[in-house]
Image (cartoon, rainbow, N blue to C red; front, side, top):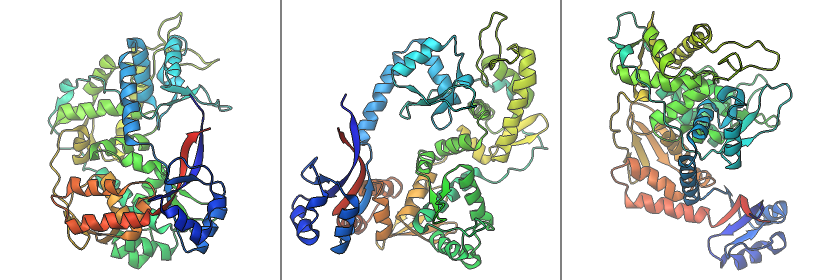
Length: 493
């Protein structure tokens, strides 16, 4: 396989534009080879941008993306490769996936380094696992999973025996995590648009907080200019920071959104909730989530007996938290050199796992998935939706001929909310939210997406899109992408 190099490419809508650009800006000396008739490799980006700016030309900055067909083909190849694995190798892979966080897994968490060494070697040879450099003072070895690996099926749990009627002493549900997901999406899109700056005290400046209020369609934030002190948007900002989805430029003191947030919001509301909960749950606890989801689903509109749930989990998935290691003395917990070996037995379960599992239930309560009473827990409305107990067809989004969108409650997923707020501005945020599509916003969107994706998004949720809206978006996109600077294009060495 030939080695690849990442380059920046100047791309034009039609090959005829090369003569026009060279006549206006004399760009030939800044360009190299031509991968295609409409592309030229950039050899001097600074000089090229300066020349284009002198001619009044502002190229659309884009980032290279993998082709959707290429991704689908790779995932299909991985699926076939997994199906061909021996059962014990597949079990190690699935354990690694369940213990991984953001595609990184620690060997001590997922398998026995001696017993499963052959399986790990096989997965490494297939490219499903790749070893990361050792970190001084960090126990164990870290591995990165191929991000295109299909998710493993949840273990076949059965918690029907733990299901019971709700009790009167169950606490009231906490704040909605679904509502928080939508607020995270809205605030993240607004931060991308505004690029707010921080004060010396690391708070968003009042002027930029007011700009965020304009973008979010929130008059209270617009008038107060205090993002951190706002009940709704301050909580969303805290969640973004807890997710490590927002960072600060140390020189400009400007907030920016991590590109990984979009992936975290992808899929259905249930999938986005599960992904965000995994990121907010302590690393050692997120392997419990499939069991908790299964218990809530089996309970339906009822509750779950906590003691029976723990007993059933021990019977069905004894190594849910820690892999069982082999030793001459029998099964043991994972151990570091010099540590005392601890038997992997029922006493160990009561001492270690049950304590950790109750911590997971406590964390799930704070995240708004369950509500508890002594010895009992039940799903909140959000928790039951996450578990697949409840579902409802979303109401339609309405698109008007003047580029306005009306979005009723539960009409879009968090990912779709993020995209809509990137494509326009919020005119009002009430029971029904109103947005207006904007050309400037579409230009930013085109840096990471195509206009066809925006039209697909609208068509998926709206019963009908006026022809004028389609024509306007396509015309804007053609005009904005007439000359593009595409970074990160992979070409052979």
